[in-house]
Structures are given as structure tokens and as C-alpha cells.
Length: 412
Image (cartoon, rainbow, N blue to C red; front, side, top):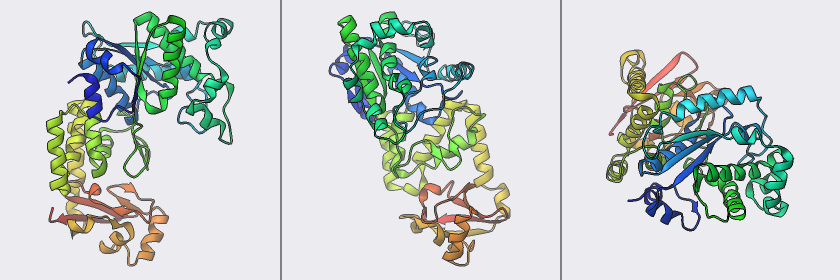
């Protein structure tokens, strides 16, 4: 199997230019992805992109990661409903340094002949003068062409519109592709589907000024089965930096994955092969309450991001919180696992566990922010407790800071 086929079966091909499959099958290709330095750490949403480069390298192709020290000072309007807050050059430099360290965990910078590279587009964007840029690059883009791009048209329809600063982002990213084509013979740009317009702009620029063919490949944007943005929780973003998101919190994020999402996550976030993933798919179907797929996912990703020591700490803390120890002093209640097959309303769950005397009291408690599942505050009084909330056969629940319950599921 070549890397294009690998991307395809893992669900990582949303759109691709004609000829990209042949290039990835019959040639050794240099490809790049850009990383936006709006923070000093990548987050789990970025992990999909990092894995794209890492898989490419494992098949013998050469990956380039652009950390956008130049474009980061402008801001990509793709997927954004309003103008970004612009960062200072000092903030950008700190963020670039932090992201560089994290990328080095996943990409091999010493592998010959396809060692990875990290480049900063400030190296060329920071030196070009505006007159030369408008004359040599800007003239190749009509306003009509730019207005057709979804990242621009969507913002134009919004109340705030789009500034000339962010309107110019598409041209700057296209220029990045041209620079990498000239400097490193980079012929492929990859990324999420929201980048398709920016990528095709770069392909067009290379065709016009170099009369050469370049390629693009994008994957679907990651969303949960419930329709929410992947990587966002009630506590905020899940970061790769252990100082921002602890290995335990990181592990719990993945171990609590919905059954509807877990197979997709196993494909895109782990190195497990098809037979291993198909075996886990059967386990989800035959014994969903056992949550073998979720635990495998959490172990694989946590170990990859935080190393074996980080995984060990996460599993130790999980065992302490959910597998005994302090749990011996918490009132335990047994409920049938079948009760959660279709989900149990949060209000019904509170009544069933005696954390509330009535559904009305339960609803008021949730609205006031006083109900917690597995130490995470619940904000949706109409939501449900599902088997996705089960950890090691148990669910921890509490009302306020003092009233706690340990729900043990029977029939798992």
C-alpha cells in the first residue's frame, strides 16, 4: 500500500488534485504543511496534521513543516468568523520555538535521504518589499478569483467583514508554496479541507510563474459525532504541552471518546494497522461497554505525545481516581449497564443516584453548575450519561463539593 492508499483508508482524503496519487505512488515527493503560531503549543486538532506529515515520511517522502512566523502576524481567515487579535513579533517568536520542539517529537530530522525540515516563512516574507511583492506576485491574482474562495466569501457575508490584512493571506500562503517549490522542490501541500482555497492558489501561482505542476491534498475537518468541534471541552482546549494539559487530562479526553468517533480517531491518531483496528471495531460492536477501543486509543496517543512515563502517570492517576483507593469512602450504587445503552438523562441519573430528590431539583443543580461527572462539570440539563462516561466499569458523580456517588455498572 502506498501513502495515498494509506491516507484513503484512514479517511484522510477529502479532496486531491489530479495526479497526486500517481506522484505519491511512483515518485519521492517533498510535501509541506503550515502551522499557525498563535500559541506556544499545538493542540489535539493539530495532531491530525502532524500525523499526516509523519505518515508521509514513513513512506519515504520528505516532509516540510512551515511554522508561520510571517503569516502568523497576519492571520488566516479560514474557518474564522471574525478578525484575529494580532500578536507581536516577540510573541510569535516564542510560539514558533515551542511548536518547533513539539514537531521534533514526531518527525525524523536525521533520516537520510528524506530528513524532515522545519522552516519559518518569516525568512522570506520578512525581507520582501511591498512594491516588489505587488508587482511580482500580486498581479497574478484577480480580485474576482480571491472573492470566490470560501474563506473570503464567508467572511464578507459576516457582520464584521474582512480586512485587507486578512484578505491578503491567501496570496501570502500561495507565495510560501512558490518559495518552497524553488528552494526545496516541494510539489505538494497538504492540510485540512478549510485550506483547499489557499492550496489551489499556490498551485496556480506555480503554474503561472514557473510553468510547472504542483499538487494539493486535504482531509476532512475533524468534528465529533455530536457535531461539536474536536478538541474542545468544558475545560477548554486539549493541548499537547503537558504544562497546559496534564497527561492525565489528555488520557481522559481520549478514553472518554464516543463509540461513534473512536474508530475514526484510531485511524487518524495512531499507528495501528488495519487488522488491529478492525479487531477493535468488532470489540466495539460486540462488547461496547468494555470500551477496549477507547482505552487502546488513549494509551496509544498518550504514549506518543507524552512518552511511556507520561502514560504511566496518566494510568496511575486514573486508577487512583476510578479504580479504588479514595473510592472506598464514596457511597457506591449499582446500576445496570443496559440502562445507559441509549443514554440516561442527567436529571434521571441524579435522581437514580440520590443526588437529587426530583428532576426539578436536578435541573436546578445542573443550571447552577453543581453537578459533576468524573470531575467534569455538567452544563447541559437535557444531556445524557452514556457508556462513554464509564471508566473501568464505573462512573464518578458528585453534587457540589461534598455529596459523591460511585456508580458501578453491572452486566458489562
